[in-house]
Length: 524
Picture 1 (cartoon, rainbow, N blue to C red):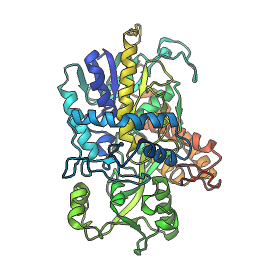
Picture 2 (cartoon, rainbow, N blue to C red):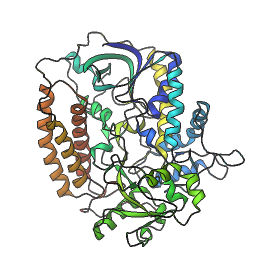
Picture 3 (cartoon, rainbow, N blue to C red):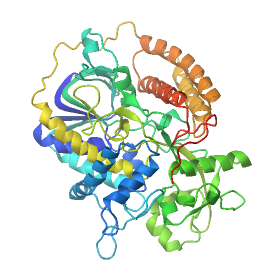
Picture 4 (spheres, rainbow, N blue to C red):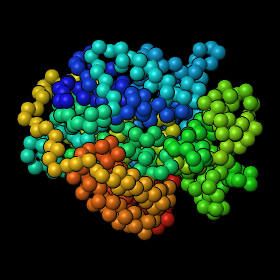
């Protein structure tokens, strides 16, 4: 099935949904997602969304907290823009129906998380992302100009390459005409042409075995842009959330929000001793990279698989009120968090790098925008400040919408794009070729390119990944497409980009920590 539209939005998290709502009054929007509409990283976000909404807080404090956490690699102009525009986007989310917790006087009940100097995190209990997603989906489904296609997987961007023209990276003459899209129900590939294409495809967590991300987070948008010769950057900076629930039989890992440490929870080794003060004067409220490395180091020194998060010293009713979802989840596996310590371990959580975009969300490829976790805006630098991601998503969705609306009237749909070529392909006879390679990629990345790295580990990872890449490309050329095969191909591309950028660094900074180089940048 071939389609034409004004705006093609790929992805259904906060970024994609809010962008669609903001352009829908001015043209037809086709929003596709490879799973269900609510299957996104946004829906899994627990802690909250950061913005200056209190008289006790200031823009400057939020800016400085972000810059310090980013270890000197943030784009300060971008940071100031996002912080300044955040309150207006919070108001828009509320108008769309998002309900954030409030105190008895009707003011936002603001939480504090690691790296923040003030209470500025808006939340809806411990299911903030799900609440934002609920409100946005309701608006999207009701809008007459937005068509939603679930179970549709974007395979590749359509560029001049598909018209037989030479395309080179780092040039300014690449256009995006839309995307080839696989209907997962019919297994047929359609040509989806658009005046404007928006990638809101989320993160890359599943390149690692332990991740808090849903299984759909396979870096599809980033991989597509790299194949299309677009610019991708900062891929070495993978944020591991320090505290995911240690439950080996469950995947993805269940997130224990950072807000719990902001609430007063402390970290302990399995013998009950606190340890964070050894690593940072801020203790459990240090930025995520510091806390994750501290936990990783304690686990390795002691030979343990997890540490404990202890909130038992807080009033039981307050715990249940603030963290009802976590309370019920832990109770379901026999842990009463009002009385018992919570076993936790780090898990891959957020990609700070991605498709390089300008302050309007425009990529290096014409008529192609990237917003949300798939993009690299310059806000996060070498390490994301807690709860800055959801606000980045909606701020950049707004800016991309305004910019693309000003451009779309001058863009025409491209003609002469060939249909997908099925010639010489057949259904793969042995699915184990795909599933086993998928597991190997995750193992390689987890063991060699995790929280702590070294030159030797990176070299070994690159060599191992190269073998899988060769085998998978051969399989891709001869096989009809499946979701598993396309995701495997994308994950290999993501792994390559992470390794490539990590190996080129000659210092430890932010989320990239190498035992071969002394740490030169400190967050203080």
